[in-house]
Amino acid sequence: MPELPEVEALKDFLSGELVGHQITRVLPVAISVLKTYDPPLTALESREVTAVRRHGKFLDLRTAGGPHLVTHLARAGWLHWKDRLPDGPPRPGRGPLAMRVALETGAGFDLTEAGTQKRLAVYVVRDPGEVPGVARLGPDPLADDFDEARFAGLLEGERRQLKGALRDQSLIAGVGNAYSDEILHAAKMSPFKLASALTPQETQRLYEALRTTLTEAVERSRGVAAGRLKAEKKSGLRVHGRTGEPCPVCGDTVREVSFSDSSLQYCPTCQTGGKPLADRRTSKFLK
Image (cartoon, rainbow, N blue to C red; front, side, top):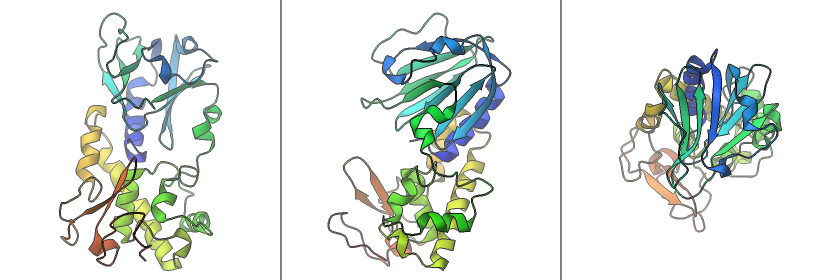
C-alpha cells in the first residue's frame, strides 16, 4: 500500500506535471472506483489544475473554480503517468485499469488496481473535507507543528498496542503497515507494547524514530518517477517484507507475525529482548 512517503512523492511529481494544465477528459473504466456523483466527473473537464496536495494517504487535485479530484490508492492501486496517452477511449474489461485522466497536451495518467479486492477510491468534491476518510484524519506527522509534546498527548491514555496505534489514521495520518514496522524497528520497540505504557524517554525515542523514518523515506523518494516509487520503497525497508533475512542492525533473523489480512515483521534482538512473537493470540505483550 502506498503510504505517506510515496504519496508525498507522487504529489511532488504530479505538481510538476499537472499544475497549469487543463483536464480535458476524465474517463471511468471501473465504475465502482467512483464514490461520489455530485459534482459529476464532467465538472473537472476544461478546468486547469491549480495545485496538488496530500492529506495522509489521499491525493488531492485542485482545479480552478471547480471541484477537487481526491484519490486513495488503497492496498493495490497505483498511478501511472504517460507522456502520451493512447488514442481512443479505454475499453472496460477485466484488466487493472480503473480511470484515465487526460490533459490538453495529450499527456495524463491512469489509475489502476490489481487483484480482486477493489478498494481504490476516487471522489469528486467541492472541498476535500467532504471525503469521510480525509475528515477523520489525525495530524500529519511531518507537519511543522507536530512536535514531541503533541505526539505524547496523542498517546496519553492510548490503550492499544503501538503497531495498531501508529496505523490508526484518525490518530496519526499517513503511516501504514510497512512504515509502522520500520518506525518500531528504529525505535527498538515491540509492536505489541502498549502505547500508554511508554515512559517519557521511550515516547521521545518513538517520536524521533517516527519523524526520522518518514523524513528519510520522503527524501529517498523525492524526484523518483511515479513508475519507480514502489521499487524505491521496497529497497529502503529494513524489516518490513524481509522475513527470514538478517537484520541490518544486529544480524538476527527478521521474523513475522501473520494476521488474517496482513502481517508484521520485526527483529527479536532489536525489539523484543530476543524473544520471538509466535502468534498474536498466544504471544504475551513484550515490553
